[in-house]
Amino acid sequence: MLRLDGVEVSYGAVRAVSDLSLDVAPGEVVALVGANGAGKSSTLKAILGLVKASGHIRLDGEDVSGKPAHLRVAAGLALSPEGRHVFPQMSVRENLELGTVKRTSGATKELLEEMMTIFPRLRERIRQRAGSMSGGEQQMLAIARALMSRPKVLMLDEPTLGLAPLIVDQIGDLVGVLKKRGLSILLSEQNAEMALDVADRAYVLETGRIVKSGESQIIKADPAVRSAYLGFAEEPA
Image 1 (cartoon, rainbow, N blue to C red):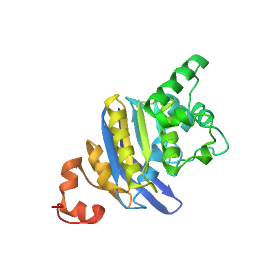
Image 2: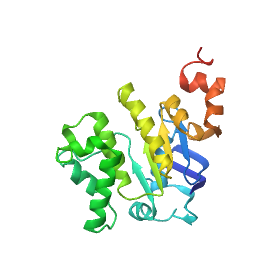
Image 3: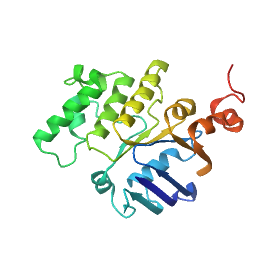
Image 4: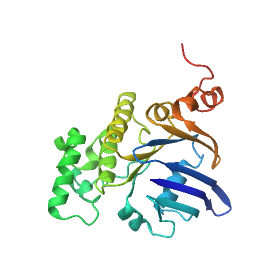
């Protein structure tokens, strides 16, 4: 569903992503894990066309590398950004409607109802200003807004950042729900333990390069990965 070949991103003289190649199969959850500054967010921004990048990016067989961001969204890519970036003075409903791509009023109403089903809390807050909601509620709104474009691939950038452990668990459960709906997901997370628990496969990034990849549970069991990214070298008792 998504394939990157030799993608590179630079900010001036600083190379943020180097010769990165990865793929996401239909209905698969793939995690990008690594420390802050490893290149995870730059990779997602490159996929969506928010930063200049070299290499090739293919979505469902189509090379979208030369397309601007709005056409990549129309083609089936969506990003829930790090920090959520909801519009605080606008209502939940208005934030959601901004996620639609060339939808009729009937289709938008249908999409809104679908989001209310997946995120019951948003139904309760539908007229509330987004800025007055909790961090966890805003994160749900950011993900729902991304889903309003009916993406083929949903990219989640640090969805658990700054959230309480209970909400982190809810985000993990949500990823599982979306996977059951057949959605392909690329998940960027510093919380490697959570990401590896919900993902099918994972890529470990360090200073813009993939240093390890494979099935998520095999990656999680690797002592070197556990020591560098999970905070302990041995399996817990």
